[in-house]
Image (cartoon, rainbow over all chains, first blue to last red; front, side, top):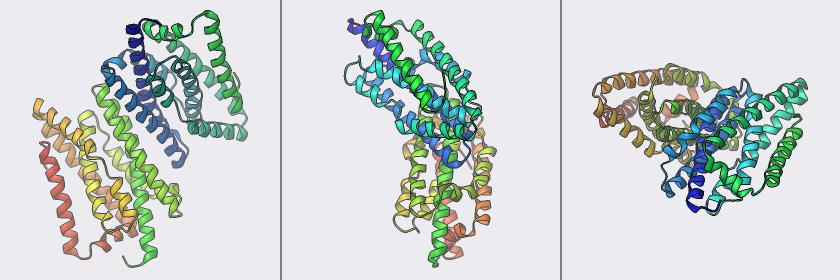
Length: 218
Length: 218
């Protein structure tokens, strides 16, 4: 994207999308923590939730630096993120962990790709607010152990993960249609259709690898 | 309390009570944040919730240092804290803020008194995990503004605050009966009945002052 004004609208959109994503993920994880089988595991998911708020605060501060009101900037993204979470409310602890593992994994890969086309300090900020890998490691260990204990779990969680990806893509598409400047941030960065295809291939491969490593299948 | 073994049981109890208090308050505040009238206020309550988890982690780490399993140590306090929160689920934003303001205020004053009779490093830890005053300031400002807009709110919130205090005292009594070593930590520190009376007087005065400052009455 060569137009600086359009670029700056898109950056505000991107940071606001991330910010509301953190705020909404906080809610969801905080509630999901009650699904934990014991207090130790509950505390870990609560900590994962709390980390989202620390990131939210950084994003809101940057939005203020850019002269944007965080509330107004986030509002356009509320419906898509509400829909995603409303459609994918976990029914148990393993669904909650799989959601954190699969959903955050894809989202982080995507934001990582977008960040590489941003300038400082937004590039560093977006990379910084991606999820801490120790939480993914915790979720992966829990999922693997559950499958080892009861192999039937793999099938149920694989289906759940496909539903998460489907809902996520559907809402991502909605955001792209409603916020063209945000879509252009990626399309502008990814200059031709081969590059877009290769981006999706990278995202898909990483997702498949994440699924395989915990014993789930696409 | 002069018996070191009993003292150390009581300290583990105290830290575990605080730890589960933080974990449960996190849940409650995270859920209450959805009652906020806008995204900015929702984010502030979410941040208050997240701060509880940071404190939880410090308490759990100290319990581990003392050779205690956080989960087992916290378990005896689950019923009292669940009861308190189940009986005092806020129905709206102002009830949620009043609960944070009044309930955390009294709890902090109480833990502050207890901490003064602990030794390092537990004394500093307990003082450190008390609530940040900027959250109390935020809640106080919101309550005052709501009363200025609609004076009838004062009566409703005053009644709500009395209910919070009643439920809190009832559960505190339950904990004292079930965990005598914890009660002795305070009684041992507060050596005679005059001292106990004066402690309760200090707690009550501070509570009344907090109520008055936001326009609520006892």
